[in-house]
View (spheres, rainbow, N blue to C red):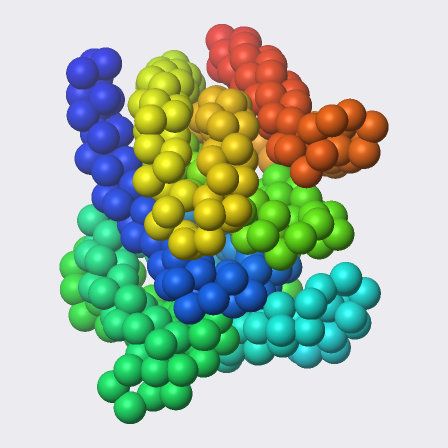
Length: 453
């Protein structure tokens, strides 16, 4: 990161940060995409099992990972304020925290997965795939959280291309491992959807190892000497990260968990409906990586400017990101509208599943517009370290407005399972409106404070 003096310079730097993040996020989600697509090619029950397993796991992962995301604004503000000497110890304590959180999630998962699946009205084969898909993923939770923590450090320095290269090296390995363990190739047993979990775990271990090696060996990361001068874990240092990270994590959890809740509520419908829902949500979530990447780039850019008390520059970056999100949403909507049949056939060959998937995709066109506004706004607010009010807004928008309205539409109108998707659209739209109001209020407040000072 470096200071810029004109709109053109800001736009250029923002794109330099954004494009590698976007490629990284698309590649990361491609792992889940190929898990779903390749499991669906193995069988409908495997697609449904991976859908259930993913929708139980993703809210937990994204919520906990949100805590680790706090490292990005912390480091970017320190670098922007010329306090690089404080960075190494913060990253080391973050490493301790990431490993500790991963261990806690693994232990809790061991005791709660069976009771949760037993309470769901699932076919026996679907429940079996979901359980052991999650068990396989559990073996890679520690390296996954460690990699995400180290990636936050790498990206906060503006070195987003490094993360991109690591993931681009890992993606082909993930596809290869899926090929081996899902379909039983190269001497491995054919495990269907369960094999997708094994493939993901192996990929997490490799990605984490490469990230450690790069930070230890290459500039500018080597300058910080992250893996030397270790001190004992510090609860005070953990609290500084948790104070920012926990609200971020819960806000993300409230958003992602509404999708999981919808999938679980749909367990009363047929396996074909569950499979079609998962296929549509999987592709729509893949497109969501675009506004999410804009949000991550905004956190870095806004945090850097706030660290240097350059409020106007932070505001300009916020609106650059928001404009990019809106523009790209129209392109994403066009893709969903024109390629719905092609997308549906990627996931399954069953004509009933294809027809249902196309109907779900139609609703996805509308909620991705709300995402394209809401995600960049969240990223900008994280750059300001404004996270507590955002948490409350997320809870109200998604769980007190979105999910109840979806349940009512599903049960008391002719929408049926599509009513839940209408609820998602309502919730995401409400969230986008309130987040925009919060950003405008915060920018005016900080501008007044700076003027008074």
